[in-house]
Amino acid sequence: MYEALLARLPPGTVLGYDTAAAMYGFGRPAGPDEPIHVIVPATAAKPRIRGVVCHEAVLPVEEPIMLDGVPCAPAARCAVDLARRATRFGAIALLDTALRSQTCTPASLAEEVIKHDGLRGVRHVRELIPVADPRPECHQESHLRLVIIDAGLPAPEPQVWVLDGTGRQAYRIDLAYRERRVGLEYDGRSHLTFDRLNADRSRMNWLSARRWAMRYFTARDLYQTPALIVAEVRALLS
Image 1 (cartoon, rainbow, N blue to C red):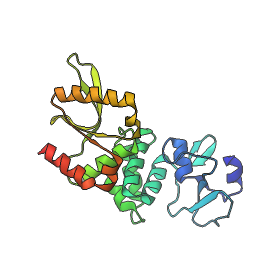
Image 2 (image 1 turned 120 degrees about the horizontal axis):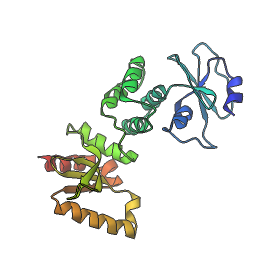
Image 3 (image 1 turned 90 degrees about the horizontal axis):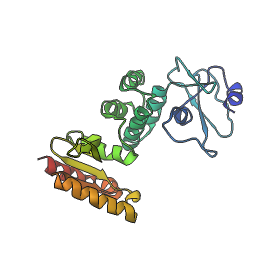
């Protein structure tokens, strides 16, 4: 499908943005109703094709990567292109996911963002790359971590295992400060089932017995009253 489409587009056109990012394993998953995103050379005319979004290459795609037989913008290029257009929350979640996919590294992202200097949205991407982390398992964990970092507090460590007396991994915490035994959890809808509530209660009691101070935050806390999260974490650390 992509080969036939590229044959209709100017020479040097590559897949990019969400389309290529999905092929790398991050970004918005491709679907039947999603447009195909391509990057066309800056000097080429942008044809109008239904279901295709043509992005003009303000920056040239120097070395396309062949995926499934079609040329794509490199993974780090896709990540920075998408993060520049996203909100701060969206950008950190995307950068975390790009690292988690193992198609990007901190070094490749840092090298790529330099090429985008002066373009719209690059400032917050430049700020976020040093704190991006591959370990969060959902976007809300990335958002929660960013709320704390943006408040000037130490960055919590994602996905921390707590060991039992035999050295076995017992429970894993979304975000934690190991030395202070402070744990932070995001509670989404998956926590509302009866079995999950029982498991969470056992886990909470086990961690409390080992002097872990645990705090649990919901979407309402995260997106409506983030200042209260910051105040709670600051009090625990002080």
